[in-house]
Amino acid sequence: MSLFSIADLHLSLSTDKPMDKFGSRWTNYTEKIEKRWRAVVGADDTVIVPGDISWAIDLEEALADLQFIHALPGKKILGKGNHDYWWSTISKMENFITENNLSSIRFLQNNAFAVEDYIITGTRGWYLEEKQQTASNADFAKVVARENIRLQLSLDAAKKLQTDAGNPILVYFHFPPVYRSFVCRELIDTLHAYGIQNCYFGHIHGTYNVSRTTMFEDISMTMISADFLDFVPMITMPLIY
Image (cartoon, rainbow, N blue to C red; front, top):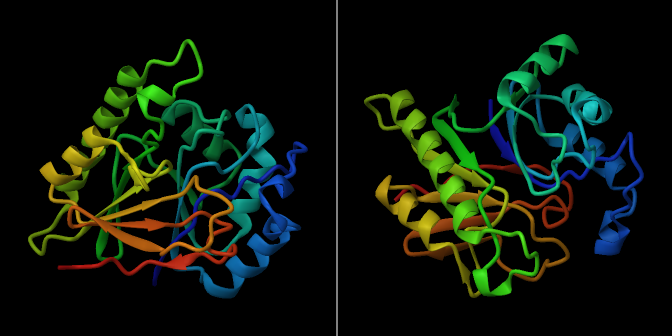
């Protein structure tokens, strides 16, 4: 039983949202996801998918994409991305999953999951400095504060799941909390407060000549965008130090 990670599936089985604008690597990407997922993930494994899962605008439209994910091997834990307009309340999504027999799917929001020897936590995060805002109705401080609260709720839930052995807590964001010159200080400070050492993020597309994992203030930051991974779910072996 192994843990895998991959973000940004960008499925559109019920819509028409081509991804080719992000580069040729996205050609026939749905077929690549299925073939390469099946090549590495087994029925007893778990795959974390932190955001940008489906282009659907509501749960009904997302059904075909969620059925596609459910049919793939393994258990799946899904987080929210900036394009997941179909994402609803946890109760509505869990009811939807039950009604449609999608039992291999769970949702990550304000909660945590014990998986193998690890505890999975996370939130969407935020990736926009206030001075870069272009939308007049964007409220940087409010969004960051909300995401920071969600991160803390998830980490509090994780602490309750920890055993005496101190299972490592892994944090999954959709947006990178740190990328090049961008730093979301509020989220980083929370990671330090909870002693987090390993984070994973997606969102970044078309950039393939960078290191998969970088260190920031003694926290490892690993990029798991689907195209960066060439659509092969990454077996996840956190740095323990």
